[in-house]
Image 1: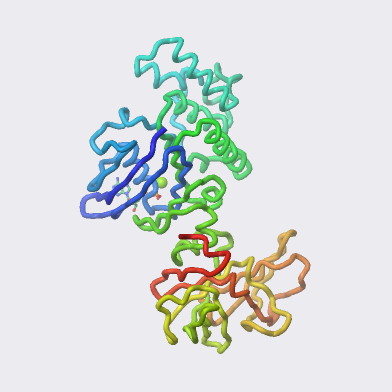
Image 2: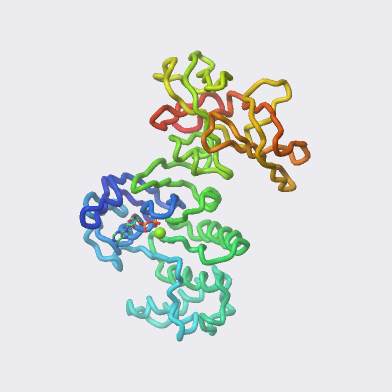
Length: 369
Ligand code: ADP
Ligand code: MG
């Protein structure tokens, strides 16, 4: 097991800087997930940790030792890729034994390691089979088994489930959680899927365009996103954003006035907010409700989706360029073309300044330090 430290790590391909000044501490034994949209640099960051890409500048330490110049095989790291990269002509047993054989391990040691890994992954009855005789999920297990036999200090997984269908992804996700519980080894897991990240991580690292946007627990990212990017990336359907200006500030928070004349109180620390500042209110679909009293934002229903356990209202509004989505009780009757009033309690409102930086929330939702 090992902790990792990245200090001012950058990556350039020729003149193109794809990772900038990455600073990150990963605690020994944590399950850390790197999440972000395609092309944001997740794989690049992981490949630098594995030693498959040079670090252009900055320091990478594993257990306090700088490893920038240590070759991949000597870093105590095992990496599992999206493509399983199994040898098609070899049995599962030989696929899993291969790395240890190359490293010169003795037969009894290899046998014990392969059988132990196979048992952990519930594939001990399949050891004589060839990869083509396996399902996608089983192949993925072999690739993980091959990593386990090497007893790494750190596991790296790069989108390991993206070749599997949705049902199997959910099942294998639980397997990763169980594997971490059992091995307690530091694991770094890359995905573009925020649900997978939320479900698995002790700590999530949200990346965008080569930068770390926020590091936090799933709850911190959901309840106290540091900025508009994280707020919009975590949660599905995504957070609603309503543009307005600061009308007044008080101990209860910030009153925001919309161009349509309505106001909304957001329970946040006003910080440096001044009347007249441009701000954006953020409200998750599950926190936007239809007001019976006629208070709130007047808006028009574009479409209704009934999902059984709930319904989604798609709403047109002058103050939200991307439109609004409200998650409402399944049997509420609304139809395309209806006008209604939307409201949110101040406690459920996030607030962002014109640079997209979040104001600190008050009360129970002020999770992040
Ligand atoms: P992700 O895994 O988050 O989808 P990557 O780490 O693969 O993203 O890529 C991050 C950025 O680095 C992208 O803009 C990609 O085009 C660029 N990139 C990755 N590998 C190379 C390379 N070998 N040469 C030049 N640019 C690269
Ligand atoms: Mg990638």
